Length: 204
Image 1 (cartoon, rainbow, N blue to C red):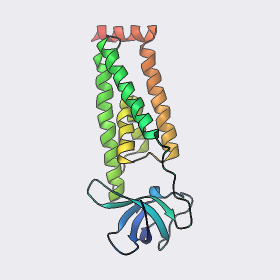
Image 2 (cartoon, rainbow, N blue to C red):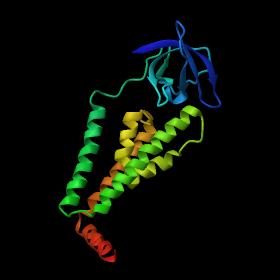
Image 3 (cartoon, one colour):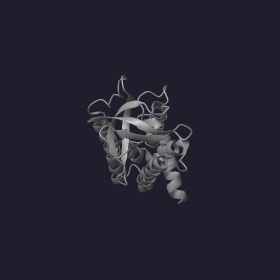
């Protein structure tokens, strides 16, 4: 459901403000990243339409914001989130099976689980910091977690927390890190990768 209101407070240097809904009611926090038109920055007092969500602390937050007269951001294609979630689930299942049959050491599974948990909480911390205008986690750090194996957790955070899922440049880099990580895992199944694993197991 979309609502209409007016931007009654805007701090351009910090990239956030507040929207007062028509008819009164609780103001909704709005961040510059929530606007459909990234080329136009608000000045304050503009009429906008928006979707209303609630953050982890129960505060109203505007999402998919569009200036009145402009087309709102398109939602993700139907089923897209389900497809990516299924991909991550199948991937983790594949790693589990590979460990069970002895094709991969359990350390690989532990690496994916730990880095995924760390990545999820890093995304959650970054979104919370953005809402409070506090110190943010660098995007390069978030991408590094994905590259090291935490991309299933990062993907879960993007979908569940709706964070970093609409920024095209970030998504391109994210999926590149996923491809590189999957490629590295695939190499472990090659003869040279298998020999490397045996050498590491022997050294341990």
